[in-house]
Length: 207
Length: 207
DNA sequence: CGTCGGTGAGTAATTACTCACTCACTGGTA
DNA sequence: TACCAGTGAGTGAGTAATTACTCACCGACG
Image 1 (cartoon, rainbow over the protein chains, first blue to last red):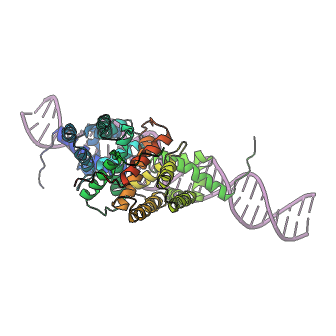
Image 2 (tube, helix red, strand yellow):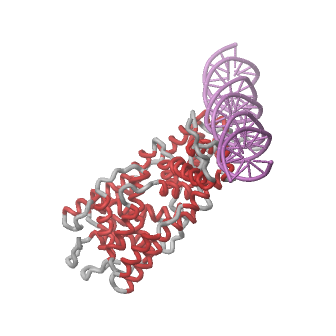
Image 3 (cartoon, rainbow over the protein chains, first blue to last red):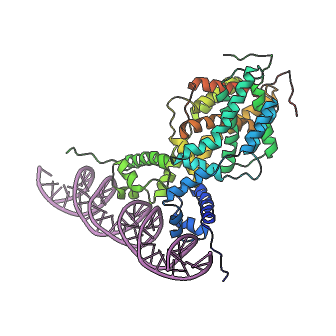
């Protein structure tokens, strides 16, 4: 019998959040029982409620905790200053499409939105809106500089993020296999999209 | 007291499926109780189990029932024969992005995939795979005819569907408002994408 | 010895599902 | 016409299991 040292309140809380996050991501809020969470965290069910007053509060703590990564936005900002279009788009795409990316957050996001959790919007804002807001601003700037064609920047940004997110959806949620490497996939998407945005002397749009 | 004529077995079954579909779409499988379904269909809970042996069987019946629309694929086929690229893409996009489109199917699809229902894959295949398989074939043909650039047709098809599906996701699941009309949105997406696919004499890709 | 991490044993409510039963209608028969 | 047995739609009242959550209590350590 090894005698486990008792955890501090903070450690336990973190452990519970981690255990619950993976369960909620796998089975949704309603599909996960507090007993399962307790067992996954290696404690009694009663202790769960010592740390979080309700199951829903625990769920909220998960959504509130996971924060966006700022270093990516920094790198994007830098590439944007240099007007390195390809790099801007590649950075954003390969942040989502890369080997070993964790599907937990995507699943949690979808579950929370579908199940209509109150914190869903905040979660969405922190994880996704920032990206397409940033991107829309950049596209707008480049249109102003006559480097890109005249399109609605917000629609264009969503279109690009859409390619990327949809790819993850197919792969991580629907189990569609990737027939190309991560790099090839990203390169193709960036290529297609940038080419679509670029101005070309020949052929104007029809409508 | 108006005396309701008793329904036939088929009518009841259809009513139950309709009631259950909207509830499952709204709250997921685990979030919906059989009592709610019965009440929504206006019958006793016991009758639900006279028609479907288990709750899961009822869920399965829903997924198995809803079929894809063939008239769209017919129209696409026709446009494809005429090599009317813009029309092919516009048809597919505006089938998904149009006023009054029902979000029930999209929600059911996501729920079933997230909750890992066995019939999810079949559901996905009937509603989505057909589209990007068709589209990929067409893109492949057009590449062969040197009308489009050399890209992986499957990736390209997914990229386009990705724009469209992501748009619906934002709008119908995450509640992001559409700041453009349906037509403008579709036109922008098609325009961006087609322009990206087209060959342009000037400026070759950098890598 | 008091505080804090931790638990076993509950409880009230809800859940999917069952069962014994009623009611409305049909077709055959006298 | 009158009657009656059969059938299938429909239900009220359960039941066993599960669920989120509670509470009285334990024991280690400063």
